[in-house]
Length: 115
Image 1: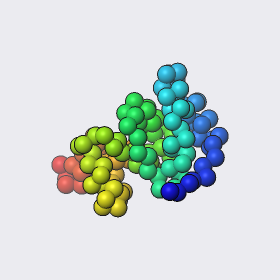
Image 2: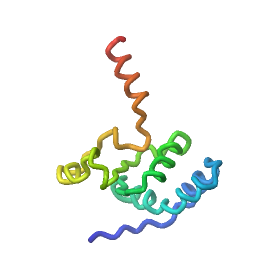
Image 3: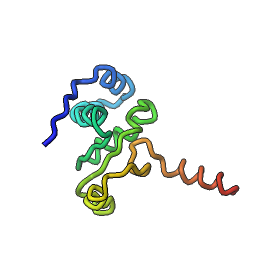
């Protein structure tokens, strides 16, 4: 077992509070912000089943940029192949990042191809 010394990040918490206008979303994120804080002190990976808070953090990653660097995996979503991903070293895949935007990536690929 590995313990991570991840003290509360006051600056991150303040950014989340200030950038979130909907109270329920703010509460959800603050309830689980310790997961993000720990991931920032370790490998920038969060493994959680909470899709609501994942969505909230993903949405906020446009305003709080550090959130966009977090890899978030739901261990119960078969389509994410979490066990296979972990067994093969949990390599960084941009599609798993909170800051990843499929539409933006698709547009960028089209531009690179000259379309």
